[in-house]
Length: 333
Image (cartoon, rainbow, N blue to C red; front, side, top):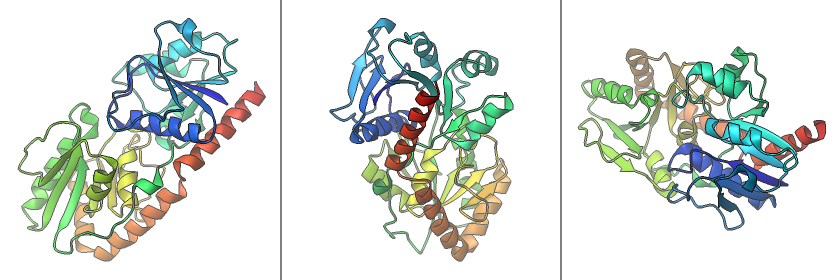
């Protein structure tokens, strides 16, 4: 099958771009003809597209090659995907992976994006539920995880509790500031609590953060997660939050938030695969203290959490599901 990923925002060093690259590479490994249409060279340092995946920079919509499927990957690529001649492709879809209200207002999202003629595919339950509120149906396809990249090395310390979080300054909805406030209060009570964070900004040199890693490689992230006992998933605007899944694969216990767009509804079940907090500092602290005082509970949730992420399927398994959906949609046209 000939598939085009249409990207208007460019491939940058972020979770969304890494997911597109990983999915494109996996589909290519499954013997599909994959092209990524972009506006610039790949800026996602350390995450290359495989040789067989074509990466084309075009400025004119008429330059789009013929294909079976065109996939709009972001809100800005919806318009150009719609305008591609129907003679050039059999199916046009929009793979929604976020509620991009930093691009446009919710009113515009509804009228320009949700009401577009493109078939809607989403990557997580949170976004599927969001679309349902506006009467829009969608198909759910998880991107899957590269399971071999993340595993439990059993190297955690018995003498301290290491809490992990994502350090992010661009989008306030990631709520890195909440993580810092939580740990600041916990450190006043517990001498053995440490905070480890990673992100793309330079080291913030914040006294609350005991260890910071900038732009870690896959191997560095795997080792980083393996030192974490409790991961805080505080973000409140995600469709499918990838980072907590990686932490769970490495044996960390996740405490997430109950917001409608937490991005964890696909895999975080309160008391079963992790804990879910109300979206405030005090409730997060209550959940964390429960885990600090109960190692048996941490171990149980850690084991169940890892099993849940594996159950959701590898990248390869989910891309096979994606292909089956594309074939079904083309047959129904």
